[in-house]
Length: 126
Image (cartoon, rainbow, N blue to C red; front, side):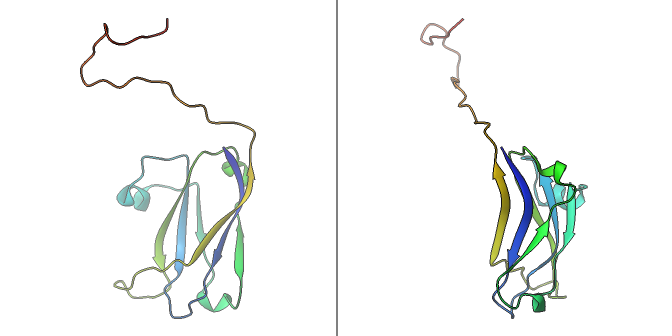
């Protein structure tokens, strides 16, 4: 698990349609586009317009920080872009995350998958 302090965005293509609004979801591995569009996020952000990206990247702090500590996954949903045109695709050139890892380690799961149970051929502890 990790703790995230900020999302970093950058854009070096002034003719592109960068994201305008993004939604952040923590530890939700069950999302699809429809669900993410309708569900209340852990945090919603409006990114700066493209003319602010003169050079480099912009850090967007995550507040309150407690929502983004000891998480296993972060889903970023791009709700719309700065193009103003429904038909123009969103272009993302760089997304980064700033934070730190924790000392917690993911443990491997020892499991047996069978289409048809065969207890005589399967060794099980316990």
